[in-house]
Length: 434
Image (cartoon, rainbow, N blue to C red; front, side):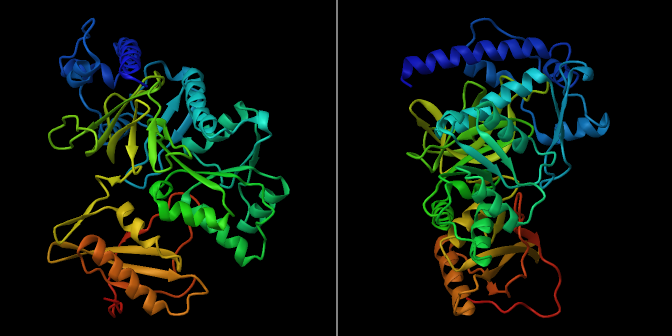
């Protein structure tokens, strides 16, 4: 997209934003008083960037507080509740689950946005694609959107909910699935389960694996490991949020870069301290305004996602995917550690089946230690732990204890993995490789 195309896009975004703001006042009991308190009034022909700067930010804490004050759904609704037909909620991994409602029009718009992710990868029913969903459907918005988007494109949609890993593998193979949607962790787990169950994947028709929910899809070592397990299937990342919707996608040509779907969202990459837009190549916090979700919108929503700003064919994009989350960062001896940064190191070791990071407080300072669960074929777990410790020290200039644990010690994850946990007091210290 050239400079002229960018100007046209921003003009369209400005029109959509003003239509959204007109809808919010006076109907939305969350945003109407919020905009009034900020003294915001629309100005005709004002540049988009100037309008955004005058708008107040929105945080998840505010939305949760509104939900707690007016249970069960809060006040971020532009229309009467009788207009809403869909209920979803966040996972609650970073606090109180946030409940989100959608009208049919908003839901259909998000389904169309989610379909863009499939189209960008060339997935359509016209090609005979069959999409496998190896998860139990819960209240998480992304699962339902992906299923309905694939159906909208004419694909055969195959649910693997409520099945064991072995049964899911047989379902995938028997039905000739050509694409699969899951977390990076479960793509690894399912591929490893095939080895454990002696289920050969050589005859699988699976060509594309869409991974979401964790940063692994933008980490080369994770993508390569998944692809090897699935005999060369391409691994494509995308990301979104229940309170926002599906936001980004990647392509085979740029598998390490998430592209924002700017026809549905306005994205800003801001310095979290100064709240000013960062230059291309710099990192900042992703701030999102929804344009198609009028019933339960978010305006300048601080996602806490840390991204590196770039452009792909003129579209706002994020090099390296989601680099971390501001609320997940742990400062260890003056070094900022993000879970995704640690994963980038650990996943370069093929002999690590699973891992866990324990965070403890010592003398009012954070310290971390890793437990690694080796693959069954690992000949020397202690030596592996030492190699991982050396790699972590090289990457972060920190000496981080790493200890091997027996097979089956660490939990297996189907949905979002929770690998960073608070350490429990132990009678005996964990032997560490240094």
